Image (tube, rainbow, N blue to C red; front, top):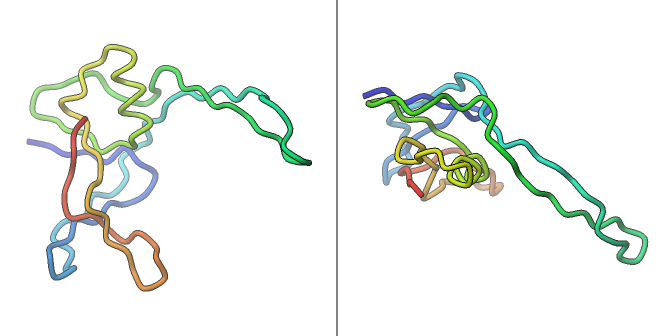
Length: 110
């Protein structure tokens, strides 16, 4: 089994005591194509609508290989009829005292 991180930053997996048990460095970036369209003005602020298309940088399904990706990328893949059984999402996020995400305790699938 192989796990590859296709997010732009390292992913730390932590135990219940917040010790890092594994780190997955970024090995590339998988993203969903994005289109932004103007919707309307709210006071003096632009309101836009984002829509997402096919994923970019996401390899085809390969038995025994899992990819850590963003939720938007996983949803994009599913919308394009790509299997998502190999796509992992961070879950049970761990934050530091400033509220910044420093890791996760588990992975989720769609």
